[in-house]
Length: 216
Picture 1 (tube, rainbow, N blue to C red):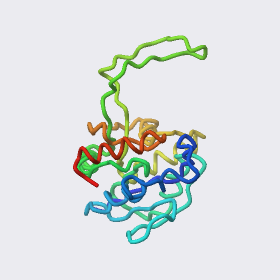
Picture 2 (cartoon, one colour):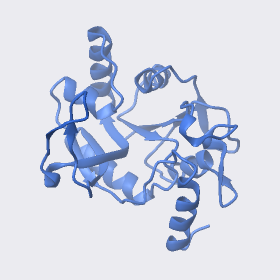
Picture 3 (spheres, one colour):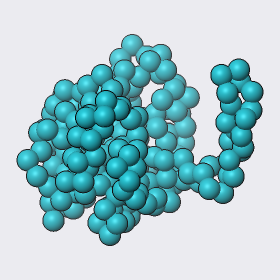
Picture 4 (cartoon, helix red, strand yellow):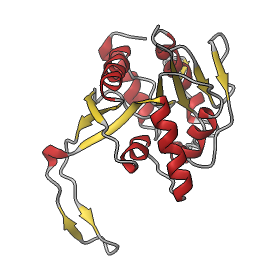
């Protein structure tokens, strides 16, 4: 089976308030993006990793330019892939993902055709209107905070992507592409430590998580 991983690395990271890409910031002496790619490179089930920024050397990867939106960035990468069985999409800013989480999600995707890592929501979520008035309170037990990787049968993902383009829709979540064509997507419960590096506070948090894991 041939599987391809796409590591998204084209975000501008404005919330990080740094003078360079958040993916080039270091966690215990290693850049965010290298930590992410290093984990994926250890998995024999993944054959290729297209990456959007030329920030690495020594890894068997190819590069393409990111788009103005997440959907456009993934589309740019998909266009460089001739064919594969499964497409694995992961945020470059999630450097603490584990091999176990990736493989568990891949196993589910191979079984069902589409799967994503996620964790149960801890807080009560409120839906508000344009005036910040609460209009609904979803049942917490039915809510999942979706992370990445998100993994799909390649041909089905391409079909969903092309459909969204035809409809003029742009989604910030890859699962929504499949939902848009009425395809089922299954959740694999992951770990809360699979954080996304977004704000300055996330760097020391990531270092603390690595320390708890006994990793450098």
